[in-house]
Amino acid sequence: MAAKAELILGEHLRTLDERFRVTLPESLVSGLGKGPLVLAKERPGCLSLWSAAVWQQSLDRGTDLVRAKIDAGRLQGKLHQVQALGRLLSTRHARVDPDAKSRLLIPEGFREFLQVEAGGQVLLVGAAVCVELWNPQTWRTYLERAMPRFRKLFDRLTR
Image 1 (spheres, rainbow, N blue to C red):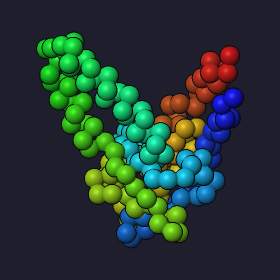
Image 2: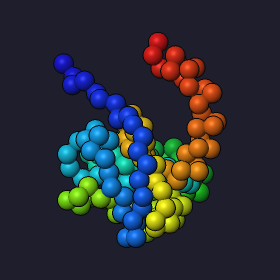
Image 3: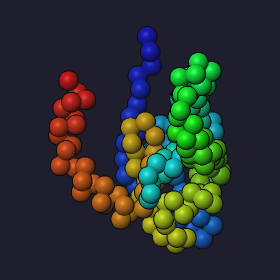
Image 4: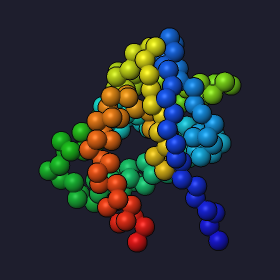
């Protein structure tokens, strides 16, 4: 029997310190399990934090499929799309390790993508399977668009 998957839920407002670190609440990161983590660029103003094992498994499945398609000649004429994928894969994610005080250093390149300066606020949100770090204004904009569709989404996923 498979283990029951726990959804990572919750919302926490934090301050990005002068060294670009954010303190992670145990209630969110415990859902990621033990071991290394991966920080990924999701959309401008939003990063996601994943278990490195889960991230790598998903990445390996996808890149193995792309390699197989290249080897089979199924991506002929799509070199520009393969290059675009390679560029984004090269810069999209980084392995990160919180320190002993559960502070996560936001790497350079990811800071600009998050669009939060040192001393600014960061919203940490449980996104069921990962933890998201949001620029608060970007989060408000996202919620304004997404919340009216909540009931429909919930009903569709729970049938």
